[in-house]
Image 1 (tube, rainbow, N blue to C red):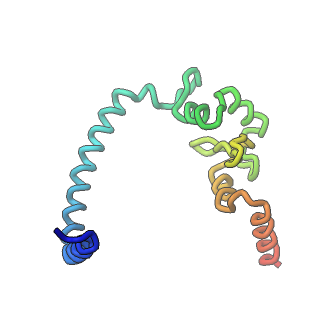
Image 2: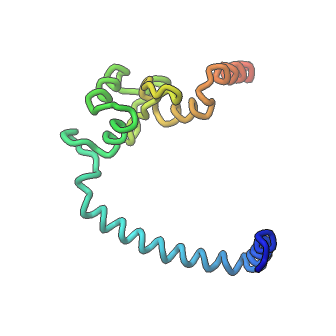
Image 3: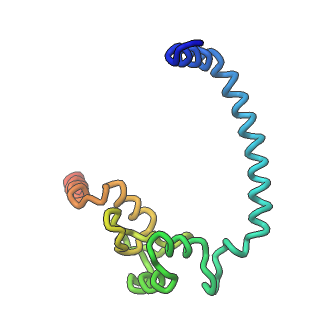
Length: 147
């Protein structure tokens, strides 16, 4: 029986020698499998569409409403109140929400909800690791670059 190191070396050599053949077979398998999954998803969605679509009258929770309630403890009313308090737009750039609404900005350490942000502003804060010093450095950089 080969040792674990010998088996690992053999498998590496085998995979390297058969890389293209495996790539083609895996791509064909994924394509066939994807069609099967997509067909199942379409049929499932067709029977459950009422449960998961956004309701115009907000008399029932949409999927986004349920996620906000579960992750952040925000009810539909609390979200709507925050949105109204912010004038119906992003707390940073003041743009109105896009088709997916505004994201709930929260402190990743405490979990406390802060404000509602558009996707761009929310992503920007995340990419700067919510660090005010990094954001100030970025601001200084932009101001210096414009001079």
